[in-house]
Image (cartoon, rainbow, N blue to C red):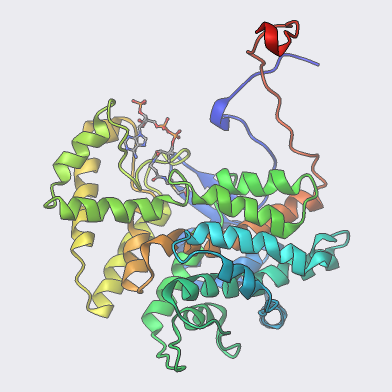
Length: 391
Ligand code: CMC
């Protein structure tokens, strides 16, 4: 018993100890298990980073091969999952579809809930890392009206994701190294970000000992919102809106600063970073490189750069330490890859998957208690019941 303090939004409340991701928002530093995000984005591949986040160390060649083989062995889903997918209207938002399918996986893999030993836990982890990209690809293909199929397990993890998504119905597919490398980098940059909204959701749902897939499904739903992962879709829609409006960035800057206008500059600001989001720096350069390498000229990129320049010189944004975040430029790269806007947040989920898994695993291994915040009650004091005809 004691005084309950409330901290709406948990702005200054830690929920756990964690050895996974270090973030210094004042200095703009992000490290996974001690390795800087800059170095990982430049030198590692996504599956190595997934292993690092989940198990704490970079894998040796043998560990890496075994991990990938175990994942490949699980890169199949029950045929009946297609029936669930079929029941969704084509207009369904892919985030709702993917959250539902992820939760439904528990029904097809009931043993995935048993995580009493580290070995059982490992089985659930490789299962979801194998099956999730299939669900992502199928969600995309269903929307595009393409037949559902599997990719090619002889390819790398990220290469195979792109092939599963874009292989034509007649089997044609040309691999593009620029796109594979760009997606690898994007997924690494999204792979973990300590106790953000979706990760906290995964940990708190998992703390009731709900299974991994159910916990991840809850995390996907949390990520969907435009203040979190959904910002990448919202940024592109905003930039397209500005373009359609004649490219008048000043008008949108004024709207963002107007306290009577709910409009916010999407892709700007962060709960923890009060400096440049280091991921945004890397993504901005990647957007330039990818568009350059592909020979794509996208006027949206110029609008984004113009908006960023104006915001960084504007006292409203400077005083509040609002900088571009990870979502500001990522959509421009996804768009150059041919990924439709409403799939952007699903791509974020694909990247965040190892982080969610690592955080869930850490929570279970540390035997953390069930998450159960308290409240300060502000409702009516005790009242006598009044029967319906006397009200
Ligand atoms: N445009 C205009 N004003 C803003 C913005 C923005 N994007 N972000 C924050 N502010 C203002 C806000 O109005 C407030 O002003 P004042 O002090 O005068 O009331 C001040 O800055 C502090 O904002 P806050 O809402 O108290 O900050 P928060 O830590 O609760 O919210 C945030 C953080 C990310 C939700 C918010 O900055 C935001 O809504 N940004 C736009 C959405 C976005 O890009 N989200 C992606 C976040 S990064 C990736 C991820 O999490 O998935």
